[in-house]
Image 1: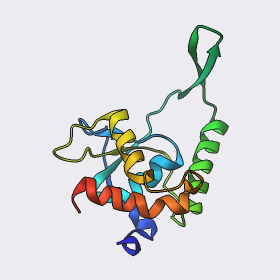
Image 2: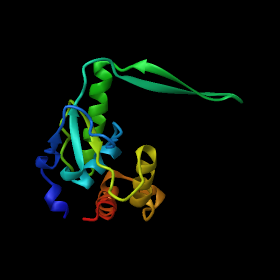
Image 3: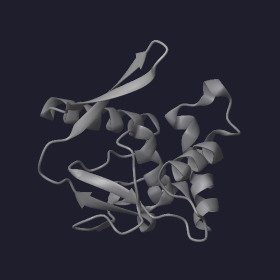
Amino acid sequence: MEDEFMTNSSWECAEASKAPQDWIPAPENGWGALILWAAGPANFVRVPKAKGDRFGKILHRLPNEGDQSEPFLLTDADLSAIDDDIDNYLAEADLPARPRGFDWYIRPPSGDDLAGEVFWSAVWAATTDSLPYDGLRPWTMKGPAIEAMARMYGD
């Protein structure tokens, strides 16, 4: 099954003008990209990034008051650095770089009531439960991610 995904064509998927209803946005990080790849092109879609400002959040831990988040504007350099980090993560897993300029969405598995953070938490657990804490590296997570996605999507 792994060999089927080892080319750049693994990122050639449906392209939509907007996110499909009820599909789950992938986080903009290497982990999210690895899971998209492991799920296979039939289970994800890309949407051209909308023009306009993008924001990140800074989390401030306040003494005895919990947390406070503050948005900040991401510059073009910030966005490029995020894409570089994702490409590096994928390269560490021996995977091709993901095309840039898109937002990515994954189809929720049928029959599961998983959405948003619940989905990503379930995927994390399914991928990492059998790995030692010090084994959470892109190259060690690739195989378990493929297996987790195959179970979730019934492949």
